[in-house]
Amino acid sequence: MTERPLKTRRLRVSDINVVNHRTLKKALGGTIVGNTMEWYDVGVFGYLITTMGPVFLPEADRAVQNLFLLGTFGATFIARPLGGVFFGWLGDKIGRQKVLAMTLMLMAAATFAVGVLPGYAVLGIWAAVLLVVTKLVQGFSTGGEYAGATTFVCEHSPDKRRGFFVSFLDMGSYLGFALGAGVVSALQLTLGQDQMEAWGWRIPFLVAGPLGIVAIYFRMKIEESPTFQATLEAEEVSARHPETGEVIGAVGPVGIFKAHWRPIVLAMILVAAANTVAYALTSYMPTYLTSNKGYDEIQGTLLTIPVLVAMALCIPLTGRLSDRIGRRPVLWIGAISTVVLSIPAFLVISIGTVPATLLGLALLAFPVAFSVANLASALPALFPTEHRYAAMGIAYNFAVAIFGGTAPFIIAALIEATGNDMMPAYYLMAMGAIAAVTIYFLPESARRHLPGSMPSVDSEEAARELVATQDANPLLDMDTLPFDSSYEAARAAHVGHQGRPGEG
Image 1 (spheres, rainbow, N blue to C red):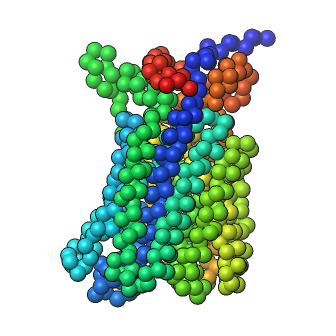
Image 2: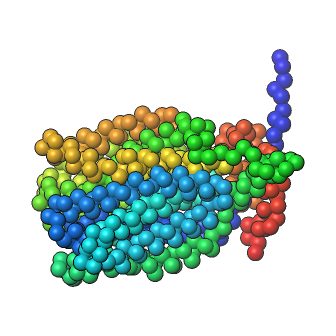
């Protein structure tokens, strides 16, 4: 009987990242504001489509105006993959914090710019062209925002509570959407349609200016994650020619896709399925209620707000649940409930009363709370630290652009082609079934360290316990830990510079 060889890789207490909770809170707050602003703009623009049409194309009929604004809204999704590829690659090279500051500056500036754009009466058709340009800039910046924010918070969070902390990003997203819808609704009720078309439509966009300045201030205060900083410094040492000092072996977006195409495709399918339901709820349901169920425009907006707020407040609970029972079981709840609840949701909405409509919207919100938010912690764990931002940018933004952003159009086209108001339910069921099968192939990452990163824990005591039990710990994968001399030297220098948690 041969003896089992001893492990040559051994964890030490100094290897483990002990989370500084003050830094984590700053990182979480600084990233939430960006996601909130992103969805605030989505909500504002989506609900002002019928108002802004006469401002930028007054000579066109109402149908052409709406198509132009819908197309402009869709342009953001064209630019998102480009932004995801560029900012993801850049974030893996110079750092997450710097890139997230850049994306927020671009987003806030472009949103504010919409509010000061001259209308058709001043610039003619060039006013419409400038509107498209600003939305393209927004889409480009948004492409780097979500992937970077999820990556950043994942790398700052302790392994055992990563799902809980990262879920706050999506809570901020849906609260931002509800805030945008609420601001538009309040203005519509107080100003009336004539004043809204004359000048009132500008107010929600101008609000993004001061909000953006505050958000940028908080984001500039956050610190780079120690894990990524150590990886970056180690790469700078190991990737240089020993004699010339030149950087060798640089990997671009194409190389990243070739190296990680399987998890990228897996992530794309899951993002597509989850965001189809999410965009159906947020971007399509107000139109569905107005066009198909007899509600007026303000009612269609107002009915979605309480459901979005309630769902947003429940999202951290599903994140905490995923830390306890695993990402896959929680995601399966989301996928299976999409299949089970879609038909009842649309049948209840068809009753036509306000309570029934709210119940139907809540049935659609249920799977979103379980699926979208928990992908934020499950997907970054598919990729190693040095390529995590870029791979997430590719997977998330291409999937959202192809499926999420087109969900309202596809659903509307299905109803138009068949004359059946239940077609949205069948479409969502199909996407839920695809997600349920795909989750089977998703590796479980709850309570496990991120690949290419050392474990992260809440306290020094937890670090010592992890080291003492490392041989019997099934959550430790030694093969994905960065046991490398350049990494260890860089991390020791970075920890020495910042101090252990509680210092400074």
